Length: 284
Image (tube, rainbow, N blue to C red; front, side, top):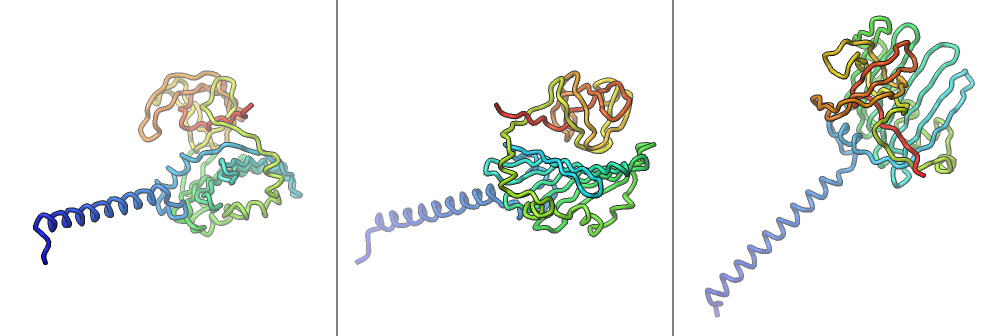
């Protein structure tokens, strides 16, 4: 016996409702998967840059290591809330040769390097600067150039012309495990030295560093003001005044800062806040 038309219609509606519900659940799951997309799946530079910008770092430790060849390495290690190494800042200085190398490495939650910034300063000749982006230990993109320290002009890098040349700067930093082996810093020793921190924008009296190459130090807090000097990555500076806030293109909304640069004879000048590192303050 066939069911009445009303029962047929009801079953059709139930079936349609089930299909819509199933489609909605699949859609939600896909959205959730997209939100939780692991870092090792990132395949382009903008997504890596965005990931680095949103890193949540809550504690740090600082190590100073003296090498047999008269090199001093200052290492700042930043961890996330699960005590995973997410960022390294390494300053290597050779006392006899006036050579300095600054490296900053960011890692995925799985401990794989996703980004490296390297800056080599050979005094008084020139310097090299470069960025490299990685996925699963493979370089997917990079750019590098040399800077004449006299004229402060940039040109294509003679030292770093291909991926193979960049691998030199990645030695010991392709993963957090490789870092532990390279510097012989056991995890237990690292965790023992960790101190909780939070990050904020610089205020007068703070010491911070320049985070990009060829940053303009200006006479007034204005992009059209006279250029006093071009600053380099890891230039240490002391903030004396916080000026006006301004939005400048892709650099976002930041304040201007009057600073004194430690390495130069410049009495002071203004720099846009996007090019200064946030200040890590220890929690009490």
